[in-house]
Amino acid sequence: MLYWLTNIAETHVIFNVFRYITFRTGGAVVTGGLFVFLFGPWIIDHLRLRQGKGQPIRDDGPKSHLLTKKGTPTMGGLMILSGLLVSTLLWANLRNPYVWVVLGVTLGFGLVGFYDDYLKVTRQTSGGFGGKTRLLLEFIIAAAACYAFAAIGRPPLSTSLAVPFFKDIVIDFGWFFIVFAMLIVVGAGNSGCDIAVEAAQFAAKAYLSLRRGYHFVPKFIKGKPADRCAEFLLRWHLPLWLRRRLAARLVHTALGNPEDYGLPKPDHRFLETHPIINSQLFYFVGHGRIAPKPDVAELSGNRVRFVDGTSIDADTIVYATGYKLSFPFIDPAHLNWHDGKPDLFLNIFHPRYDNLFVAGMIQPDSGLWGLAHYQAQLMAQFIRLQRNDPQKAERFRQLKSRPKSDLGHGIRYVRTPRHLLEVEHFSYRRRLKKLLAKFG
Image (cartoon, rainbow, N blue to C red; front, top):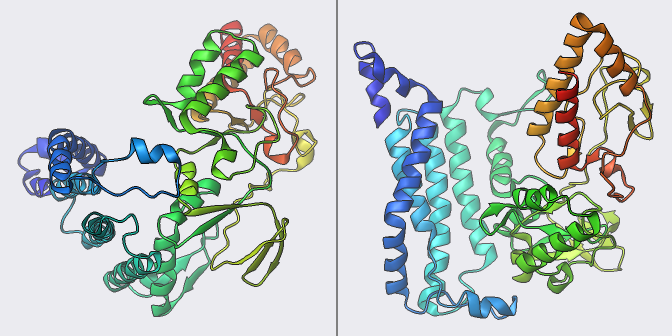
């Protein structure tokens, strides 16, 4: 709606900002947030009044849900969808047909959830309608949306698939594109546990195969991101054994033990593997929507047999087994390759070459981009020293040629390919900042 103000931007320059999607995106976020903040309490109170006892709680999940979730009103998605609808109608370019298609899919999926909750409340049962029925309705919505995308676009591109990283490979599916795209809309996800969580919300049941037991960390603890909570323990410079014990206790309080939900017990100590950040996996496992399974022993068509002897028929198998480190554009001999990875000082600087750097080749136990920022600063600092201060440059050159140091800050990570680039973020960041100050 506000996008129409661009029609008078020629005479009133101030309205030109409405042309920028970044400005309108920010406005939509603020509008949606304000709507939920202002009307959310009223919607919740109204739902609680109309529903009385709230949604019945399943008795086959964690026993704590029978107490903590009792009386909680359902259909809270109405509040979120209302905020999304208002902000979209206010800030989007409504002349763009793709906006209406995406909005229709969002509202369609929301109505499916609304009707499911409506059946639970009116029938006073936790069942709603069956998973197959839900999946069928979502397939119909996805098919309609994909047909609209194909009809709106220009053939053959509107029915073609572009293969990522291969710009010259474009496959025209014709109208079979609708079936292909429909499957992607319904079953899309990210990786590993996130894929399982997403699949559990649409499929009748999802299975998660784990090679070993892992420690799980919630995304938020007491309203704060988990890595920010970990920063408090690191700033106190507590010994590793105490920090490990406190962090494990905090996570146990927030989520409980994995084995309490039927997941395998971890075979290593806390912090010795890359943390799995997920707040929803335990919920779906506890409700039976995700079934944990051990490692895969054999595949035979759609039949999957696991190492414990059990087997299932799977409609779709998603491999989220990591990646192989590779730099195909440079000879491995130039990267000082050892033990499956380039052996570089701080995973950045070549021990001999002064003009070869690698940024971001780390797997921290927190966010990456802040560390990559300091890496780039240190690279630029060394380049500047080579031009302006040869003595300091020589000192840094000697430093980077020394044997590799411990980037885990005392943590002995499980020896798997996944942890080749693992670093303990707090000590790694502190070391980068010290080097910047020393050679500044």
